[in-house]
Length: 536
Length: 77
Image (cartoon, rainbow over all chains, first blue to last red; front, side):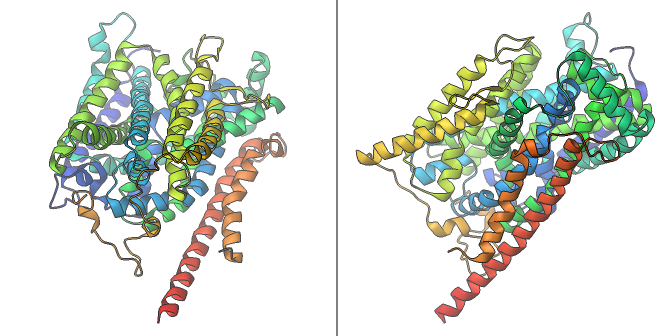
C-alpha cells in the first residue's frame, strides 16, 4: 500500500483541510445570536436553520466517511448483500415524514434538546430517560471512532499512514492533528461549524461521485464489463453474487427495515433535525433528502468497479480509496480523498455534540446538578464534546479496528431499542413507562447476546448482524428481532402494570403540542425559538 | 378522521415499504439497463419513485391542513 507519499494528492487534501478549518472557526460568527451561552445556541445552532442548511447538515451527518468506505467495501466483498443500504435509505424518508415533525413541535414547545428530554417530559420518568440517554451515548461513541477509521484509510492510501515499522507517534500524527483541529472548532463554534463545513463536504462528494460514475466505467469498458468481471469473481469465490439468493432475501429485507427504523433514533440525526427553523423545513426535507440515496446507490456500484479494476486489498475498507488512487489523476484523487476526510469531520463533530448534549441534559442536569444554569450547561456540554472525541481517538489508537466495527454493529442494535419509547411516545401515552424500560432491557440483552453468538470465518464473536429469527427459521437482522421482542414485552408489561395500577407518571405535554409550528397562523407559539431552551 | 385524501397520503407512504421489502419481486438480473442488472437499477429507480410519492404526500398534507384550519376558523365564527 505504502509505495511512497502521493505528493500532489496530499497537497490537494491539505488545501481542503485548511479551508474547512478556517470555515470551522469562522462559523462561530455565522448567524450569531445575542445569547450565545445557551445550549440552544451551541448545541442546536440557535434552532434557526432553514431548508437548505438542514438538508446539507442532515446529509453531512447521515452519510458519513464510514458510509462512503464501508458500503462499497461490502459490495466489493459480498456483492448484492451490501446493496441493502439503498432500500434502507429509501424507507427512512416516508418513515420520518410521519414522526419527526411531531418531535420537532413538542421539542420546540418545551425546549427539549435531546430525545431523552422528550421521553422524560412525556413519561415523567428519569429512569427511562436515562436508559435512552445511555443507549444514545453508547451507540454514538463507536460511530465517532469509525469516522477516524475512515480518515485513516485515506491517509494510508496517500502514503502518510506510515508502514508497520514506523514509530506509532509519527504514524498517528496526521490523525492526531486532524482531530485536534476538529475538537478545537467544535468547541468554539458548536453546531454551526459542521453546518458550514457540510456545504464543502457535500459539494466535493457530489463532484467526485458524478465524475467517478462516468469516468471509471468508460475506462473499464462499460457496465457490462464491470458486472461480468464481478460475477466471475463471486462465482470463483463461491460466495456473494449479483443478486441475493432466495435464502438471503429475508436478511436483505430485515436489514433494510431495521436500519431504517434505527437511523433517526441516533442522537446526531435528532440534533440536526431539531436545529431546523420550522416543522415545514423537516417535511420539505424528507422530499429532497432522497437525493443522497441516489448518490449512495451510485457510490455502492463503485464496489463492483473496484473488482473490475483489479483492486486487490486485504482490508476491504481500502478498496475505494485505492480505486480512486489507481483510476484518477493525482490531483483529482486528492479531491476525492479530501471529500472522504471532510466527510468524517462533519459527522464526528455533530455526533460529539449530540452525545455531549445527552450527557449534559439527561445525566448532569437530571442526576448531578439539577439547578444548572444554561451557561453552565453549555460549558459542560463543550467539555464533554472534547472528552467524547478524546475517548474515540484513544479507542481507535489502542484497540484493533474490528473492535470499533463490532461496537458500531452493536450500537445499531441497541439504538433501535429506544424506538418504542420515542416514537411510541410521540403518538400515544398508552405504553406504561416501566413496561418501556422492561422492553428496552429485554431488547438490549437479547440483541447483545445474539450478536455475541454470531461467528464468521475471521471472528468468533460479533461476526455479523444477522441470525436465525426464533420461530420463523429464516435468517434476519438481529436488531429487528430484538425490536419485535422489545415491543411484545412492552405491550404485555403495560397490561400488567395497568392491572396493578402502577403509577403512570406525569405527562407534561398536551396533544396540541405535537402539531405546533412556528409559522402556523392558527397556532400560538409561546416561546420564540432562540430562547425556548434557556427559559425551560 | 379518515378522508379519501388521507388514504392517498397513507398509500403514498406505505408503497415504498411494500416494494422494497418484497425482495423476491426484484431479485433478478434481467432486464439489463446499460449493462446494470435489474436488481440494481430497479432499486435506484425506486429512490426517484419514493421521492415523488413523498412529495405528493407532502402537498396533499399541506392541503389537508389548510382545509382543516379553514374549517375550524369557519366553525368558530
